Amino acid sequence: MERKKKTRHGKLIAQVGLITSAIFILTINFVAYTMYKSSVDGFLGGQQTSIEDRLNNIEFRISFHTNLEQMVDFWMNNPSISSQSTEPIRPEEFVADVCYGSPDPYETNWQNNSSDYVKSYLSKIGYSSVKSELDMVSQDYDYDSVMLLRNIDDKTGYVISEYKKNLEPMQLGDILEYDLEDHPALKEVINSAPGTSQVHFERVENFTASGTQYIGYKPYYYEDKLVAIIAISYNWSAFEREIRSSIFIRMVIGVCALLLESLIISLLLYRKAIVPVTKIQHSVRGYIETMDSAQVIEDMSKVKQKNEFGELSEDISRMVNEIDRYTSDNIKLAKEQERVLAELELAAKLQNDSLPKDFPENDKFSLFASMTPAKEVGGDFYDFFFIDNDHIGLVMADVSDKGVPAAMFMMMSKSLIFNFAMRGYSPKKVFENVNEQLLLHNDEGMFVTVWFGILELSSGKIVAANAGHEYPVIKKADGRFEMFKEKHGFMLGCMPGVKYTEYEFTLDKGGALFVYTDGVTEATANDEEIFDNARLISALNTEPDAEPEQILKNVSAAVDDFIGDVPQFDDLTMMAVKMKDDERKV
Image (cartoon, rainbow, N blue to C red; front, side, top):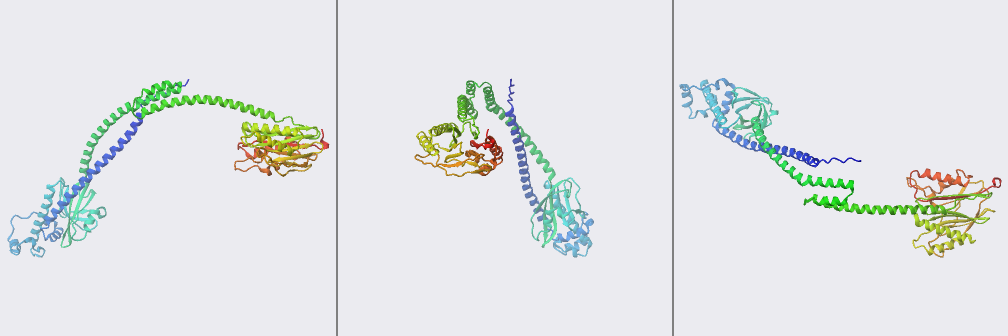
C-alpha cells in the first residue's frame, strides 16, 4: 500500500519568506545607498558653498596687503626672521624712514628700502596679519586646517602659514611634499589662467594630516601673477563616521519596521493563502485515492475566499465533474474499441480465409501467393481457381482503400470475377460485367485495379486483361525475368460502359509469371525513395529459376532490406506461377 505523502503546510510560506527576504535585503541596500549618497551629496553641496565663501573672505582680507607678493618673497627667503614677534615700540629708524616718508607704510615699496630693520619689521607685521586672518576663519568654522602656500614645482610647495585644529600646524618655511598628478584640483588651480578665481575641490588621503580630507583650493593673483594658494580642508573621515552612525540608526529603525510589516504579511498570507491551499490540497489528494467527486465538491464549497482561491475551488469542483464524465465516456469508448477490434479481427480472419491457401502443383505447373496487409484488414487480394481441367484463372487486384470497407469491396469484387469467369467469359467480358455490377452499389466511389488471366495448362498460353493494374513480369525458359508492358484498361467501378481489351502470351516450359500490387514497387525507405520496378526485377533475378514460393521470399526480403525500420504503408500482395520442364515432371 502506497504511503501517504506528508503535507508540509510551511512550504509556500517558506518560499514567500525567501523571496521577501531577498527583496528585503535588496531594499535595505538600496535605501542605505540612497541615504548615504543623498547625505554625502547634500553635505558636499553645503560644504563647497561654505568653503568657497570662506576662501573668498580670506582672499578679501589679505587683498589689503598690496605688497603681499614682496612679503611672500621675503618670507620664503627669511622664514626665521618673519615668524618672530614684532617689538612693541617702533624705533626712530622706522619712524624716520617709513612713517614720515610715506602716508601708508603697507603701500611702500619696502623691498627697496635700505634699512634691514624696516624690512624685517614689515615682514613680521605682514606675516602676523595674514596668520591672524587664517586663524580667525579656522576658529569661526569647524575646519580641519586653513593654509596659505606657494607652489615651488610639481613635487613640493612652500607653506606660508597654516592653522590646524587640534594638531601642530605647519610653520613658515616648512616644505609640503606632494605630487601634482595625485592632486588634480591643486594642479588646475596652479595652471589656471591669470585673473581667474574659481575654487577647485578634491578628496585626498594624508595630505597635511592623516586620514581623508576634503580640500578646496583658490588661487590668489596680484597683477596677473599667482602669488599664493589659499586652501581649506575638512575632515572627511569624521564626516563619514557621523554619516554612517546616522544611517545605521535609521537603518535599525527601518529594519524593525520592515520586520513588523513582514510578520503581519506572513500572518495574513497564512490565513488567506496557506489555509485554503491546504484544504484544496488535502481534498485533491483524497480524490486521487478515492475518486470520490462528491466529497471533493463538498470540501471545495467550504473554501469561502472571494479571490483566486475561491475561483480555484469552483474550478476544481467543475473539473472533478468533468473527470467523472470523461471517465464514464472512456469506459464506454474502451468497450466500443474492444468491440471494433474484435470485429476487425473477425474481418481479417474472414478476409484471410477467403484467400485460397491450397496452392496447386502438378506435373505441368506450380503456384504460390501471399498477401501482407498494411492494416488489420487490407484492400489487396489474389485468387486462383480451376475453370475446367485445363484452364485456371489467375487474379491479382488492389482496392482503392484500406480497412473494413475495402475488405468488403474486395470480397464483392473477388466473388464477381469468379462468378463471371466460371460462366466461361473471356477476361475482357469478365471485366465489362464486373465493372457494371460494381457501379450498382458503390455510393462510396471505391474502385479496384485488377490483372486477370486464364492459363491454358496444356499449352502454357495465357489470355489476359489489365484494368489499371501493375505490369506483369514474365520469365521465358532458361531466361531472366522481364517486365511485360501491355496496354492498360480503366479501373473497375469508376465509369459505366467501359470496354476492355485482352492480349495473349505463352509461358514456355520452365517459364514463369509474377504478378503483384503497387505495395511492392512503391515501398518507401527513410529518404522517401521508392523500391521501383528496377529493384523488383533485380530481386526476381537473384534466383530466376527458383520455385514460386522462393521467388516470393526473395522479393519480400529485398523489400524489407530496402525500407528498413520504416512502417509498411501499403499491402504487399504477390503471386508466382511456373511451368514445369518435361525433365522435372512429378
